[in-house]
Image 1: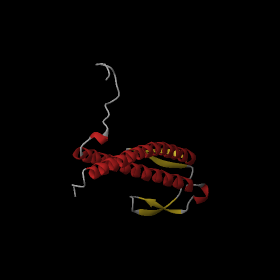
Image 2 (image 1 turned 180 degrees about the vertical axis):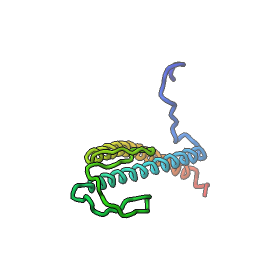
Image 3 (image 1 turned 180 degrees about the horizontal axis):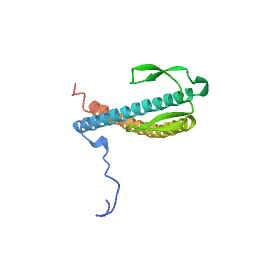
Image 4 (image 1 turned 90 degrees about the vertical axis):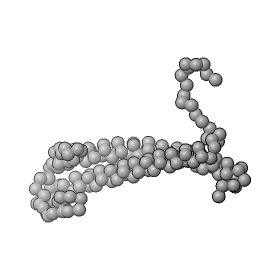
Length: 155
């Protein structure tokens, strides 16, 4: 009942007022959103684990390991033996095919910042997923109550 031209929040619809086919469509959309969000969450967790692994690798490059034989990754599953010669600096992947030389401590700090950034995004994403899940639970309850009120005619 606002005046024409007044700025208002987006129109909200009470899902309890929707018919079963409309509720099924809303449920389907929520399921797709939840699936996308949970996939994104899993990918961020994988990236976080990768950065933790990078920190551990950077910490292993230390003076007492100089000239020791190590396994050097050529691909994700192919490693070749090599000797560790440079123990003060490491080369890190900063994305899109770019690599930068940093000291061990700079590399660790870089990856710790990345992990912190991902953690912030994970926390936000987890809150969003929880809200969507709460919406889904409410929607399922509405659908169930409508089915029961309809006399169980749909089986």
